Every structure is written in structure tokens, then in C-alpha cells.
Image (cartoon, rainbow, N blue to C red):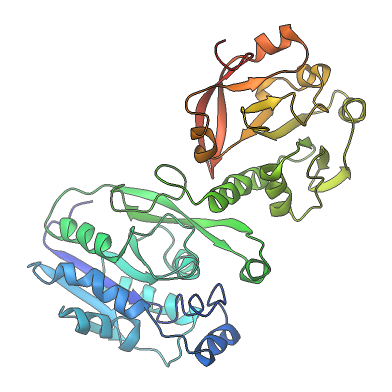
Length: 379
């Protein structure tokens, strides 16, 4: 996208985004949570974070800023010293419905891009209000920011918008919006789900990369990869869920009980056999559609032959390479320092047949090719 005659920017702030983070509430969704956060002494940070982003636009000449009254945008503009036009106002405290209403009003008033401050809940509201009709860019301000619509920090958001306002060419790309169950999160369970997409300026050095690259937050990336598997299960297909903590997260995403050191069988989102043996697995799937979900087992990067011997040579041949999905984070693969993943099925002919490049799921809709060998060194 390119601003031809100056940029008309919509500024929108969820003033309560991130309110519960500093007081250990792990989120801010819902009136009760917000009130408890305020009772514990939480201070809203989103308006100030938006002001930091807007500060980069003070010297931009052809820029029109539309916003919502008070802490939903106007106060951030005032702090940053950026002139703005107030399109409307909401009765405070604001709600998700107010966010949606403000977003659509800013769109109707002529905003060409919405700069918003919030977390994943706010991004979800914008999916509901705008879909992909209007580009957006997020200033990270929430407790939960799993979505790929945020700049890496407020200053990066401002720098990207300054480029756009100056007329530089900036591409657009669809970016995933995700949200997690806050109630489960407070109980220590990270249950993320794909919610929708928004259009964002496509400048990787300014945007946070949820799906790939850089230094990972290991637990989050495992959850994202597991969520993709959980979201992609096919009907009337047997899924053999291998051992290990990474596959256990897939089962957690599905809301199913898991045998950490065994192989469980899932059919149409139900566990039909727990901790099954190799012979039981073969007998159960017969000649029906079946897939396996496995992870890297052991310190040397083993796929088969270390702690998952239930995947016998006969079972692996029955499944076929195309029906075996490997889950591993990039961080875990990097610990191998370039060594290949290893197969040791007990059948040398099968081991050699399994060698080569395999797709490895490393995040939500993110895969890389990684080499598999039979001896840990070469094919």
C-alpha cells in the first residue's frame, strides 16, 4: 500500500488492555477481572504506549488523525503532541462493543488504516468489526499477544507508520489473530485458537513474528504448533498421538486426556484407546485412513526407537511417510547444531527408506524442511 496524498490514520485504544498483567491476573477480559485488577492497584498502560507510537508522527506533514474521545485515543494524541479530530465517544468504562463501534465509525469517517493499542482480545474485536476491509497495526499493550498483528514495540509501530505517511511503498499481508482462554490460562493451561485474520503492513523488521524466526518463547511456540495440529484434524481418520510433552500439548488443545509416555488413539476428537501397544495400533486402524503425530524424543534427536517403540516397523510402513507429522520448535532443532534427526526402528531397510528431508511443524501453519538420517550423521 502507498499513501498517495497523505495518510488518514485512525487511532483507537483499549484503555484496559493489559490491566491485569502486573497484578498477576493473566489478562483483562471481562468486567469482573477489570474491577479486580483496579482493586489490586493496577494502572492502565495502553494510552501511554499508544502515545509512544504516535510520537514518531509529530514531524509527519501530510497526516490526518481521527480518533475516539478520552482514553480511547484522544488522550494519547494529546500526550504525543499530535493533532487529532475526535469522531465520537463512549461511556466509560468501555467494552468490546465500544471498540467495535469506534472501529467502524473511524472507517466510515475516512480512516485508511487503524492504529490500535490492545491485546489479543482487542484484535479479535477488530476482526469482528472490520475483517480484512481496512489495514490495521497493533501497538502491543495487552497481557496476551499471540497474534501476528503487532509491532515489536510502540516505537516500531510509529516508525512503520512514518514510512507509510512519507509515501514509501509498504506491502500488505494477511496476519493471523489468535486468542487464548483466559480462565484456562489462569489455571496454567495455554489453550490458543485461530480466530481470524486482519490486514497489516508487511514489514518484518517492525512486526512481531508469532510463527517463525528469531528467539522463541518455547512454551508459546509449542502451543502454537500444537494448536495447528488440533485445528487440522480430519474427520473419520485415526490419529496416533505419540509420546512426549510436545504431543501432550496437542491433546491438551483438544481437551483430551493423554498418556505422556505412551501412544493414544484419537478418532473424531475422542480418545478411543489409551496407551496402546504396537499390535493394538495395527489392529485398530486396519486399512482405514490413519496418521501419526510425533515429536523429537531423546537428546540426540530421535524420531523412532527411543521411548516410542509402539511405532513398530510394520506400523510405520502401514502409515507411510506422508501420514507422519513431526512437531518440534526451531529452538529444539537448533540444539542439534545441524545434526540430522535420527530413526532407529530396528529395521535397517526401513531406516534407510525414512532418510531424507522431512517437513517439521514448528508453529501455526509454519513448517521447515529438516534432514532425517539413520546414523545421526549421514544418509
